[in-house]
Length: 245
View: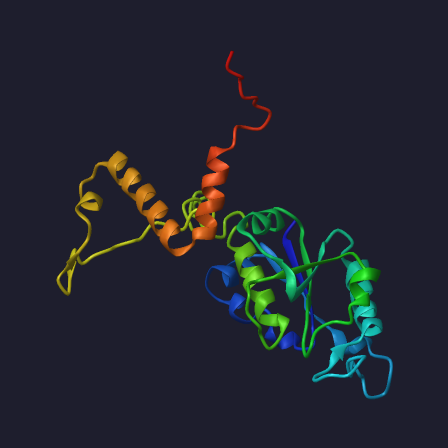
C-alpha cells in the first residue's frame, strides 16, 4: 500500500508542486506515494463559497470557519479512515525527525493547510487533529509547510533514496547534526580536503566524522547537544543503578 498524502487546501494546484520532481516525483510516478488534494472551498455552503470570517473580539485578518473546515475534514476522513489528521500551524508542536520517521512508516496523512490568521480554535476541540509546526517562522499559508513535511516523509519511503542506509548519518537521525562533507577537487582556492578523509582508514574516518558532528552540534545547536548528552548519560531502559555498600 502506498503512502497517501491528502492536503486540505484553498490552493490544490500547489500540490504536488516541487514534489513532482526528482526522487519524490519518480516515486509518485511509480505509485510509491499518492497526492490527492482537497479544495476546502468546495465545502462552503453559501453562494459566495465563503471559507473565512472576521475574528471574534476584533483584530486584523480573517479566520477559517470551523463549519467549513469540519465538512472538508469529515469528507477526507471518510475516504481515508486510516490516515491521521495533521494541521500545519505555528502554534503546533515542532516536528522532529523521530515524528517524521513514524509518519513515514504509516499509511500517510490528511494535512490541513491554514491561511489568513489561522483556524477557528473549535475545530481542534471537535476533531482529532494533531497540530504541528515546521519551526518558529510564519508562512503565508500551510501549503509550503505541508510540502516540507511531505518531502521529509517521502524520502524515507522504501526505495525512494535507493540504499536503505542513505539517511542513517544525516542531521538529527542520531541526535546530532551531520558531519561536514567534501568532494573533488582535492584542493580548491587554497583549501584542501582533510587528510583523514583521503587516508582510506575507515575507522579513523568514522571517528573523525563523529567528532566533527559532536563539535558542530555543540557549537551550532546547544539545545540538541544538551538533549544528546542527557540521552547518553541515561541508563538503558529498565536498567537499575547498583547502590554502593
